[in-house]
Amino acid sequence: MLLFAAGKVLQTLMVLLIVSAVSFTLLKLAPGDPIQIMLGTEYSPEAYTSLMKQLGLDRSMIEQYLRWLGSFVTGDWGVSYVSKAPIFQFAVVEALPVTLTLAASALALSVLIGVPLGVLAATRRGSIWDAATSVFTLTGTSFPSFYLGILLIWLFGVKFGLFPTMGFVAPWEDFWAGVSHLTLPAITLSIYFLAMIVRMTRANLIEVLEQPYIAAARARGEPNWRVVWVHGLRNILMPLVTILGLQLGALLQGAVLTETVFSLPGVGQMITNAVLNREYGIVQAGVMITACLFITTNLIVDLAYPYLDPRLRPR
Amino acid sequence: MVDIPADTGLAARRPSRLEGLRALARSNIYFAIASIVVALFILSATFAPLVSPHPPLDQDMAAFMSPPLTENHILGTDSFGRDLLARTIYGARYALAIGFGAVLIGALGGLIVGVAAGLSGGVTEWALMRFIDALLALPSLIMAIAFISILGQGVDKVILAVGVALIGPFSRTVRADVLQVKAQAFVEAAGLMGVKRLAIIWRHILPNVIFPLAVQATIRVSYAVLVSSGLSFLGIGVAPPTPDWGLMIAEGRSFVSFAPWIAGVPGTALAILLIALSIVGDGVREHFDPKLRKQG
Image (tube, rainbow over all chains, first blue to last red; front, side, top):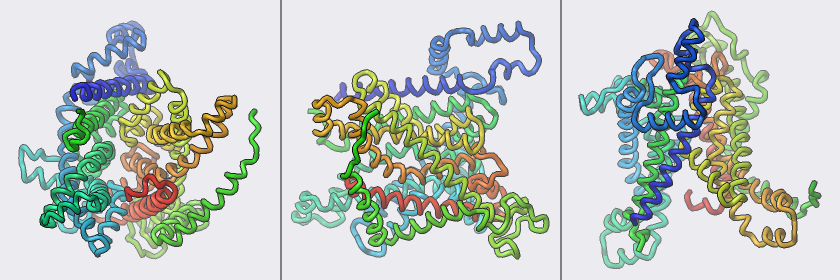
């Protein structure tokens, strides 16, 4: 068990290392000379070479990469040209909590609503409920989230005036203001997952309910709710967790678009603004944060399998 | 050069695939409707100058932000007085060209990386697999944003950025297919008969990998359209005044409180196209890939 976990962790670190090397190379390919950007239009050749030495840009690529990796791991991510603030502070302390809060609320919303809807559709196959959910899953998985966000703003923000349509208030500072600011963004981001979870729950539950152990449970006289919600759900956890891990990338990229629609100061908006301002260091920080989040979550999913399914526990 | 004999088996199978799709359209009403919708989008994009009521960049000084059903502008105008129907029809050109172009690049790149990873073995295979893992560690949109930050804005750059971002997923499926084909008896037999390695790849492996790849490509077109319009929506994809749907929706975002149709017209067009494309993709996949059928 420990060996299995250690192997997985090692593999994860390997992938992260490759991602960091690729993103470092990309940064180096970016047009524009960072020293020229820092010095402005007028500078002496001496100032140029001394700054180049100071930044270590006169060394070999491998040496530069190792130095960059070293400072990246220790949280020294450089300084933004535009705001003059340290990138680490800006990206991890300020932007990341916004994105994580948004992603977590969307995920919670889609699991809490999606699983019951999927169970309903699976246990009442062919009913009007089932037909309605199949239309919903079809549209929900392919509807462009940023357009959905604008529709929600128009309907609930402008027409009914129920929710604020812009900005972020941390729920841990002012709970109700935070929740009302998060409602529309979380719904926007969750629709894709909601549809995905309903679809997965329905398809897997239908299959599970045909298994012999379900017939056995019914034969023992267990009530229907227990058969479905205990024996049934327990056995669809695996595929559900797998799909959630794999779709986390979609959640992160959806968050980028959602943040722009609702002007939330998260990682997505940080990356977009950095592209517009040509701040490659911040783009790189955003890329690394996303990759770390995605890979770590998949590692957790991999490690969770033996707990979710006793058959997978190494003997 | 390898002499390729006329493969009668393949030639005989091909019409049956088309037949199969036709049968699918007959049995699945959603698939039939979605195919017609996609065909309509492709037709209006191709013949945009003939179908469109106005040129996409023409400004009507007398009609800024006119609501739909205004005289001369059935679907209204935007904040520059440009006809929304015209811009949406021309926008279909960009959406489809970018979507298909990006998928083509992604599929080609995925084919090369996937075949190389599937056939090489040893250290090369290990390195290629870790490279694919790294590509898959980033969501396509984030990767496309990173490429755009280096390439700059523009239609060709969006196609390239989204295409490269799709290489990861494509190469993974291609590699899985290659591994499956490689284990077949006919490949082993060809190797034992002394057929050259390149000839085996060309004659036995590629034909068996291309078809599943084409099915994958059909599924991913809607995703490519979504990612590229997302890039434009963020303001870092196609540059204005190009009538790109993502850009138009972003512009409409600012006017949503008093002129919701500016985002509504291109947004609805995008939503309809994406839903139709994904129904067509799902239908094609379910029809040709029995492994995936039960995921329904």
